[in-house]
Length: 344
Image (cartoon, rainbow, N blue to C red; front, top):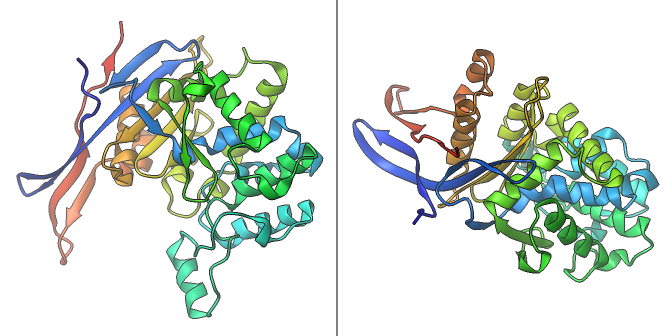
């Protein structure tokens, strides 16, 4: 019997292991074949914000981006967990103006920016948190745009029974070869539905997002539109000093990725110039540790042979991390310690 989660990242202080982060992961191709795994690839977890690129694909399919003349940067923002920096808010405001709506039409709660320097700047100036600064506001705008593009009631866009939320569930089921009535539902922190499905099926969704060539034309075009925007505007997908932005930029068009809350992460590897198939990766750290998820993601990419030396150097601060004391001396480290199990 396969353990659901196995040790993936260990932190040491001196020569004593102080913390162990357990998790599971699946790597699949576009046909749904399991390429590699860690722990149980059938384990079910909420994808959290790793689902945002697919929610953006659903908005594209609904005609939202064409109806409201979204720029490519604004498409990237629809797939984002943005940091609430000035550039992000400029795009949120521009989209709301196109929709003829205001921030009170967003269901996501007011929040200070994730980027601490901007948060501190607002606090010093006495500026209150707003819904626009919520990291999910780009996604919420896209959901509103989709409802309006279809002539639906925008006021209830966040409810599970809204037609657009149902379109999102159908898209996840179809792209992941998973029965929609088996997708488990909860409520995300921003108020819209959260979706849980097996890691293997989530990885398949990302493989097909990276290579949608076998999908129906409208879905294929929507996937390519969202993926292309994320690759070309990595800063808008997350922000300064954020892992998703750094990893997207480091990939140089080799992959797309999106992290989710509580240690979730997913990536799609684009097909290579040789007849190398696209791959999807989905992973979850059991205790929800975000740093461990980033470390595991980099290690998986390396073990798949996808990183060159330049990329290893660029991602090193997110891979093997030194623990330092108040004097700056190294007193321990945190590093991934696992071997992918490759399927024959």
